[in-house]
Length: 369
Image (tube, rainbow, N blue to C red):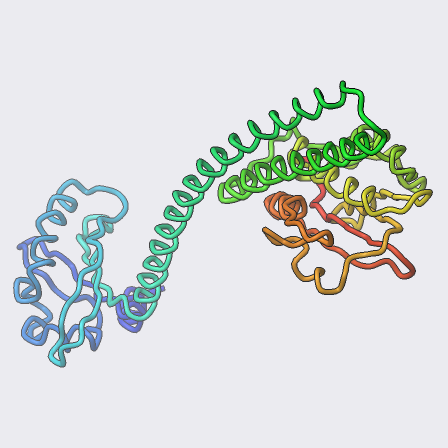
């Protein structure tokens, strides 16, 4: 490409090309862009002996650094950074200069940044505002977590007192009616203890979800082994409810089921889903847990034969403080959603065609680097 064509092209792109001559004067190379004449009418009057001192104080100061750059024949470019110039109409334009050496020639480029620069500035401003909001959100979440743990600590202390009292009461000679009341009290205690644990887990997961999740290759969880471990832990609970808890026989146990996630948190997610299924499943029903591979993701499905989720509750199932069928407020499914989304997955619910519920978790498959 010839020099004339190149300078014409730069002028068409709103780039002014100026050469520093041996006698310390400046001359325009090629055509003068229209914006330069419009902004610097006096300086553009004699393009062969350009008076840059008639342009702007900013450029005049930059030329001091440019002279040192040229004299040392440094590689690359020395950029001025953007500055603003007000034209005759009062409109402000953004410019940027760059000094560079082309062999023995000392070149100065001045560019009208235009709309693209304004868009970059706007996006940077938006990014700064969002970063500030993120920082404020993290601080508020940290305050909330401190308050939460203080409340949880007090609740745990009270629950411990209730548990001791119930234990002592159980050692007394009680009437059949008294034993029934004791059983009811123990059941209520278990529910409250579970609620406190769910609250702590949910809010802790919420704060962690604000940070960046990094998967360590040596700690990638195997969904099948996590599921089996949870099923083993809940076998006694299933027997108590007279429910058959099983891993779907069609599951391929000879392949790898590695997914993106954190093993202990993943087990907690599976535990929440299966526990819920066991509580709603009628005696002698089946809770079936299955794994499927769609090529990109692995899908864990938990199916029960209960009454299903009431239509008015479906839309809020995975929200914080979502009401449950018993009128209480659940945190377990909210915790599951926060964690699954943190790993890049999704979670959902669908009624079964005949009777019961189907909860599913879709997680990205782990791909070895």
